Image 1 (cartoon, rainbow, N blue to C red):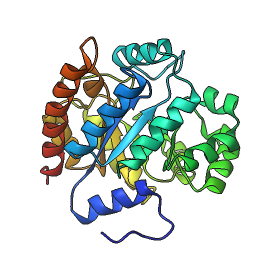
Image 2: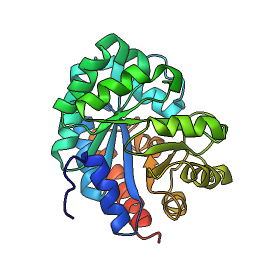
Image 3: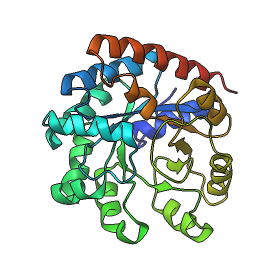
Length: 271
């Protein structure tokens, strides 16, 4: 596809997927998990399997939105000594694969790093943007200014409980895509996708033309196929991480490859 001048890699990936009448597939993995180099190997597996974008988690000690699987992976990454420079190096690795790459982080690490410096570091690593799950609309404008100056996307999370008024406000400062949390609660694998996910996507589209990607609880090829029928992007996290937990790296990567290929096939063949 022809690249649109001025678009981030993420925006281009989403446009390409739309032109192909399919949802983009986005995979989440914390930097430094299962090790710093192991994370890079896992990213290579995901991209080779057909994932369009990679979401690099910034390991943090108080992850209020993360379920037990992601918390365990983040704890391991912190024990591995992962630092900001490792997050940026992992982001650069993901970008170098040709996939779009973003960082998902709580606000505290950005504040500690310095908002403008953090945005510049993301851009320097080839990243498309940052997902900030705990940054409220009321506090977001200085970050939005820094990110816009650096040329990266500001991706905000909305939930089924988000009011119509707030939905309009949050989407007005969002770029790249709107992250639609499929349910109330924390991340993790689920047996089914709540009906509230599709309802939320419909509500979001009433107030913005931005692409909408659904995450939280999407874990099987069947669930990915279901979400891909109505969303612009499908975000998978805990299910991928689960394949790498408490296993040797070679075994984990082999399991990850099998799951990733089945998720890519399901997502791209959903419509």
